Image (cartoon, rainbow, N blue to C red; front, side, top):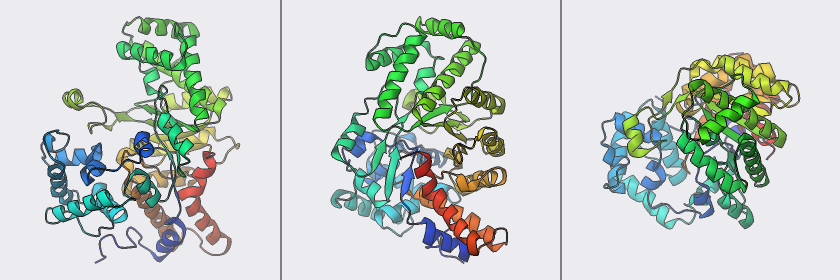
Length: 471
């Protein structure tokens, strides 16, 4: 029986071990999509406890706690202590066997705190106290210190167009050695399904951009002003959280009319909403292409399904799921619109539903144009897919239908400063996948090909992202 999580964790063959330990393990991390709070980085935040660091805002863990019958007061409640919340998590961990949370929990304990014990009710108090002692007294156990500990080179946060980016500016002025770059996330600028909220957003955008917005042309100009502001702050990527792609036909007059209608506070029809979103996706795509950015599309989720808990806790609280949307045709039409105008930027497509892996793996091949290697990317296993099976399925689809060698690799998509072991998890999975192929005689491993395989591992883990995003 193999020891739990030893140095060769997830590595089944000698070749896999050699690829990981000699070529993947020590490479820096480029985390090109995350949800870290830039203020916490700028302040070099020191965490009050392991509960704040580990359980605050982690809806992956919240879902597991609820599934284990834990009362909400021990998850998001204000009347329970940090220890009580941690204790409930420790009681839940032994019930997470075969869930990636079990592996992540112990990878994070080991890599962040040097704790090589399994978390369970018997060890809970000891681990809680040891973690908190290190968080209080170790000068390196801060937001920045943890980033340094994991060898992070670049992180790209997720930011709204009206954000001041003041914390990014502080970090740049202070000369923080890790690049902390903003990412343009303009979802609210196309959310016309809620006229009241959209009108409030337009008002804030008008104030931030410094221009009066009275029509769609003004609206577009205000967004361009903010887009330019983000570019000056070092932004190199946009990100769009979609349920599905929008590619309806529309005219300029229709879009202007829809904008006027929603600004007046009038509810739109489903057709009008879809037309407006279709126009906005094109506008965003054109702006990104003009700036030389990479555009990312995270699609396929049903968000905030539990309306009762949405009212109580708000979004991003653990009540989202994989959606079933037939978006292949609309995605193709949208990308073709941009491509036909010469305004298709470098693009990453992330599908949340793993049944669409092959769909999107073939979609990206439609718009490769030879100007950039891997210009259109199949994004890494995302959200419910950032575990062994999900990552393997994504890489198998890309390998079979595209070029795995040109893949820009993993990201955390996380709000946690100890989520970087997800890169290790990915790198081990990648090396095991390739190592097994080599030992099965599917890939040669001598001479030129041996060098190429090793380069491929290093490229996917680090080099491809560094070159692709022009950091």
